[in-house]
Amino acid sequence: MTAQIFTGAAVFDGTHLHHRASLRVEDGIVTEAGPGEEVRLHGGILAPGFLDLQVNGAGGRMVDAGCTAGWLAEMCAIHARLGATGILPTLITDTPEATSAVIAAGIKAAQAGTPGFLGLHLEGPHLDPRRKGAHDPALIRPMTDGDLSLLLEAARHLPSLLVTVAPESVTAEQIGQLAAAGVVVSLGHTDCTWAQAMAAIAAGATCVTHLFNAMSQLGNREPGLVGAALTQPVHVGLIADGIHVAPPAIRIAMAASDRLFLVSDAMAAAGSDLTEFTLGGRRILRRDGRLTLEDGTLAGADLTLPQAVGVMTGLGFPVDVALAMGTARPAACLGRSAELGHLLPGRRADMVHVTPEGKLLGVWQAGSRIV
Image 1 (spheres, rainbow, N blue to C red):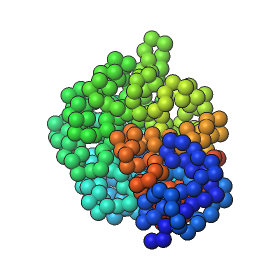
Image 2: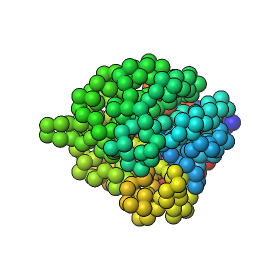
Image 3: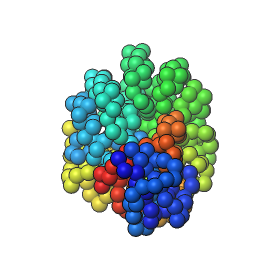
């Protein structure tokens, strides 16, 4: 393949924003300077492809018990066209059989080298029904030895495995075993106290799922999980759609922690014109940028990561910070910074061309343009 030199746009390499810069790509890899065919861009920013660690569905389908490796590949392709060139397909609280089926499909997708497949995110079922959100409370349950064994085995075969748990539904020993096996243990859908959150973090939890949503809040005498998330060295997911978290709360969180990263929490409606779909037999309505159950409970988000970047820059945050929240920071959360989230020599040329306002202008995977 002829080397290409991308010019005409600023380049965000995952850490720094370079103006009047160029980027050379050869055989799908970012390379050092050299000759090549110019690809002229017209303004905007060339950045690493976005990494979305919480993606529940796309194209009219959710991640569920009927999931296959082929469907995961289709889902990855849909989200790549929306700007996320790497995703963690996410199964929300479901039956043990569904969890096993999704893990099996994920392992096959990994073995097939599916473009954009980073691994899996299992959001539940080991949560707290008091903070269920849109999860089915009938399926929420404590982690058993059998559950733990399944997750430890899955971690051996998946590129990354992120598991959201509530401290109330797992033990410190279980968290420790998962973390030792390379699982990213995230705390969420929990009414835990500060002390319980701190104990889970001490045991090996390194992440918090969708900050502020479905968790114990920051109080003057009980800081809860929000307090722990904003004061401890953990990675913190944020749904920045302007709906799940109010702008002043986003500003407070950003002032407190430099480990926040963007997630879409996308559902089946992503990449489609659906106005409603079902989740566990319940209707999900898509109205005015919101996804809700019929009773108004938020059920995921109608959001892409480029849009989330636009929300962050619209709130006044520097564009390089907003871009890092969708690229380098999620890579760090997975412990894969040496591989993902940067445009540096030797890295795969998964790239997006965006405006600071979050408009998606182009997407490339391994140097080939797909949008």
